[in-house]
Each structure stands twice: as structure tokens, then as C-alpha cells.
Image (cartoon, rainbow, N blue to C red; front, side, top):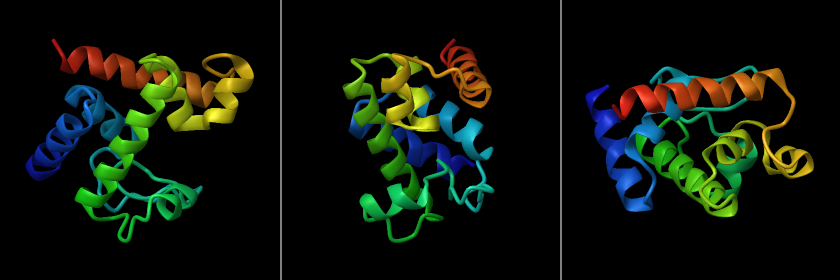
Length: 128
């Protein structure tokens, strides 16, 4: 886990994303398991969907470096798109940008609402 934390911190710094936010996303997404695979096919530490893996040119989604760099880059893009609004960016990371845009914010999906609460709660706890 030490290597994962180091990789996450380095990628967060390179991309201008709060380190503790990245670590909170990793914890919520995979519990720091680089080999995690969701029932919907999301892979690795930051649970990248196959479409994201392909779009970002990720060769090995189970590589901590590749997975974290791609996930943090995606998160950076979402933070930019939603003007730094963590709730909207995290919702889009979980449910997709279309769901956030359609609903003007956190969509009314229990899974996404719980995800956003979990990540933000962990982030606030980590950044104390």
C-alpha cells in the first residue's frame, strides 16, 4: 500500500488534484486492491471502465502507475469541467457526465449519492 500511496500522491501533484481526494477515491473504488474488477467490468485501483481504458490508451489497467495516472487525469478533467465542484466531479466519475448534466448536479441514484458521501467523508477525515 505504501507504493500505491506514493504513486497516488505523485500523480495528484502532477495533475493538481488534492492528494487526499485521490486516496479517498482509490479507497472507495477498490479498497487499494490493484487487481479489483467490478461486476460491470471496471478495473484496477481507480476502477476504470473499459471505455475509459480504451479512450485513454491504458495498456495495463492493473498497473498501479497506469491506472492511477489515468484515473487522476480523468478526475482532473471532471474537476475542470465542473469548475472545481467536488460533488459534481465525483458524481460524474461514478455515474458519468451525462447523468450529472441531465440532473444539474448529483443524480438521484442511491449508489452515486452514497459514493459521493463516502468519498467526501473520507477526504475530510484524511485532510485533517
